[in-house]
Length: 358
Image 1 (spheres, rainbow, N blue to C red):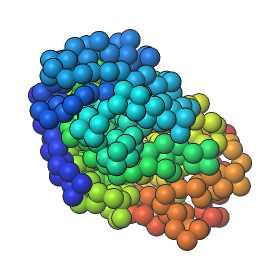
Image 2: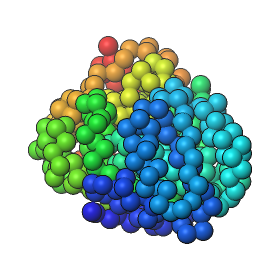
Image 3: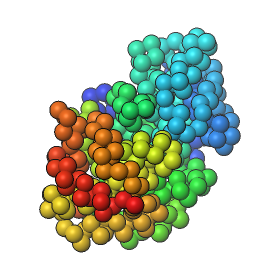
């Protein structure tokens, strides 16, 4: 087992990475917990619900399950209220613990519910997708989507621990693996050139879920994210660079309808577009743009974006948490391993859209 520590003003906690972590979830539950609510969806519940609940039952606490509809399309207020309905109906108090058993959608909604139920209860992240393991489960970002924008309503709220069971990756569809790898390579592109080069060399091993390669990729991704979150928990500066590709990617998700593309697929394609914009306005090397495009394709993500129309693209990107005073702030790469946030002329963005969409 590998352990990565996250230390933020909002809470310090461990990330445990290794096989079999699903079977020791009881070790993460505080002794004073009065009840445990496992929030999941039918797909994950069928695979891991009984196993997780059996481990949690060893605490001697009451364990209940809350199943939400499966998919990004259901990351909304209606699904969030299903959590509150169950917690209130079962009379769970402020010493209960919520367990997010699932991917990024479940993790985000469970964390948000924990942040606001009785003004804050504890929660545990048990991510079951690669993307959630390397990104969304770490750092305390929680949210639901709004029809006008992705993740626009939420809170920064840290879990008590993150339990990453590498065994669960074997049940992921190939498309989900590729989506998770988009977030993996992002860390190298913005923070660690050596890790980026390692990802280029090991792309096929990563897609094949080679145990040694995937374990290293998860650990290094968590280490890099923990470093950034520890310095900037609430995304007031440095943490914004973790959104590389997300301004373009969120526009794809919103424009096509949530769930048409996986989040990681949209981010992967968005990184290609961000690299193109970086070359035009931030001095990023054109040869490195080709490397970004090649690696995004190598991990199995789309490298060409849908043609939503330039005006619609710009409209969707305006609804972005990095927008300030009506100006969109993009995450741009100055060189592999370094990124900045800054504005870019609309004409430059339109030129990028013209050559990256079809």
